[in-house]
Amino acid sequence: MSKKRVLMLSSSKVGNEEYLANPKTMILPFLDKIQTAIFIPYAGVTMSWDDYTDKVQQALPEIQISGIHSFNDPSEAIQNAQTIIVGGGNTFNLLYQLQNKGLIDCIKNKVDSGTPYIGWSAGSNICGLSIKTTNDMPIIQPESFSALALLPFQINPHYSDYQPPGHNGETRAQRIEEFCVLNPTIPVVGIREGSGLLLDNEKLTLIGDLDGVIFNAKEQHSIAANSELIHLL
Image 1 (tube, rainbow, N blue to C red):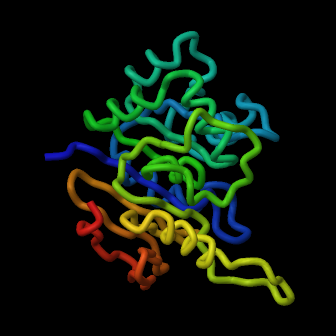
Image 2 (image 1 turned 45 degrees about the horizontal axis):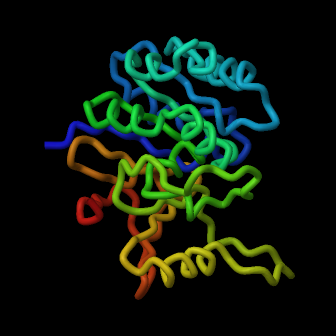
């Protein structure tokens, strides 16, 4: 039986709420009695990693947060972590840093052994097979697009059906459909802000109050909040 416990949130906030206010209602129950975590701030580009770590610590005072960049040996920090938290930002920079520091397999093995993982935005994106369905600009080139593969499909955080008036570019759904045409065997799950995916051992659930969307090569269809998605595993 799989031991993986992974909380993948679409975003760090909803609307004008305080930072991590909505995610916190899911994070704290998920952690239960765990009190320490290693935070990976590598998706941060316009904010220093120290400042990013401090921001998360202030938002989650119930947990002792340590930035992975403060350790001489990041692999050892992962191996000793009670929890791994990965923040949002630019997915390409996040993956570049993880690959450059040789942390992909380290994190994957740690999560496979049962250590809880929490991510939002970019931190959720890397839980899928690859980052090919991120919304971010490729501001840096990672070794490959292959990600943690904690789930056997793709994730699109911040999913939205909204199209601004007068905007003639492709919608989010059209961009994801392009991926599905070229990758017909790989589903994509779009999660809206305020929602997320919870993998608990061998159970996968869409959590939050909003529906999500599943895309594949033939169709797209909505999935209701709190639906079980074990068929995707």
